[in-house]
Image (tube, rainbow, N blue to C red; front, side, top):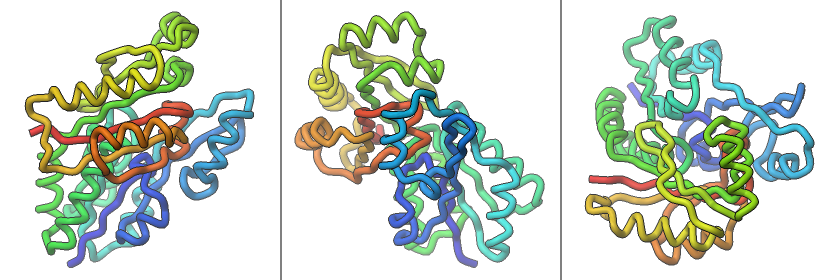
Length: 272
């Protein structure tokens, strides 16, 4: 019995990367008014950010439905299925995967709450792929990745607070004041919870904060990889990588970009 790895589109792997790695993307959707787009499939990342800059109405997103998962599960009747999904505290996608598992009654389907998203989630996906390629069973992979979710974290730097306010992550008053003053929030994503751990004026100082924070972490796991994602901010990303080292680099898709906005940078890493 082989193992099929599923991810949702908020892991921000491209369709080409997913195909090369032998994994399946189950996409969320993004909406501009009454127009609906399937993340990574019917809208490219470049098209999305172009629309984000020109559309008067801000986009919204929709989780994967249980039926969508049921349809995908049915395509792999003889495989174990390991699914790694966006934190259930950020989206209902994981819960949809669990509902679909219960409805189909399969014991060989293993939905996992990654507790993170984007750069953080892709670190877990890479570990799952490694274990699959080593010949581990779906059950063994799921147990290991579930334990690893206790150690993954992510830091996020946002170029604008507008999209955080729209998503309810910051109050409108704080967001307006922050944008006027050029304040860039630094947010830690841990166990699916977003926590503001710092604020700096300007992206350079905010990225410097990220470097200091990671270097000062007593239990930062340097034996494990790090990963980056960004929404078209190559300059600050390159400066950050010069300090922290190379890692897999992703372009945020339309769903993550809806909440992060343009110019954001995310750094995923592990703690011991």
